[in-house]
Image (spheres, rainbow, N blue to C red):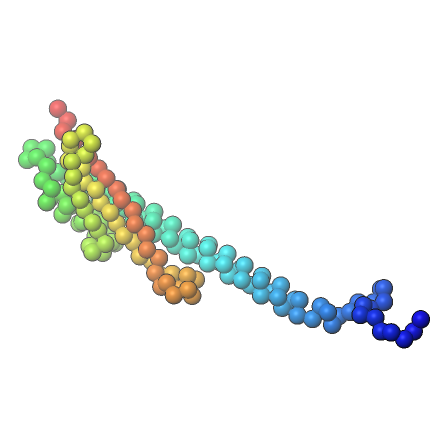
Length: 147
């Protein structure tokens, strides 16, 4: 029967016209996935490194503030704050990004709490409009009187 055209090609014949543009869609999706993975690896790694540095610096600054306080003269909150900020600055943190709080700890002894804010330049996230990655970490140390 000849005559009426069919909408499908005969068996065994490939219709390339219906596949036109399929590769473009697959490549666009693949590029999106690869860029997303790259952004996660690069910017995620930068954020983790900033967080680790902030946490280490905050803990060390709090310990330094407590350790360098004299037992003979007693605990001085102002001196402890200065020591914590000084340690953070020597570790490469801007003084404006250091917050020190001196409070009474759970057992009644003075406690120094240091919060560090780290900012790193974003690489891939900058494409979304955020030019910086910001992380915060807190460290604390308690001044114990050993009797």
